[in-house]
Length: 148
Image (cartoon, rainbow, N blue to C red; front, side, top):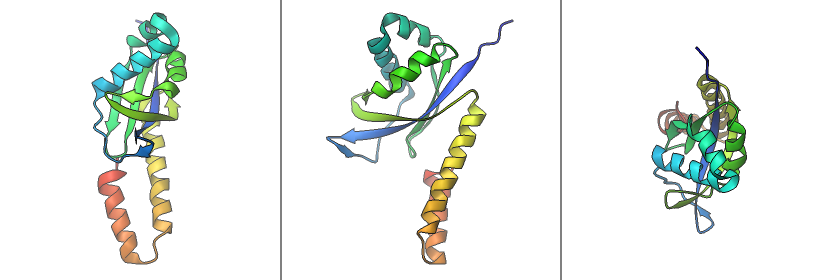
């Protein structure tokens, strides 16, 4: 039996609305997959779309942090990696995709996200002056937005 290797792309989806960033974005995995396939076909043609289509999947999608993890087969992942910066819309919304990390396993991607969220929490806590503010920031970030 042959083992299939995968690559996981961790990306932040930044919504744009007439040049201004918007906080709320309804992310659907089907829309992300459709948009990724469309941009790959646009950049690399039918060959590129067919190469990545077999193992393409969205494994993690968080609406509050707007971070997604996209799985692709090893080999054609290079085609996907070169296409992702050109992704400009998901569904009917204009977005900007910022690639953050490429890993071989989901565990490594989640470790990267955990480290990133911890750094953001530490930055927010450094700006607090009182203990009450620190408690509020810690509760907000650990429960809703930046908790894994």
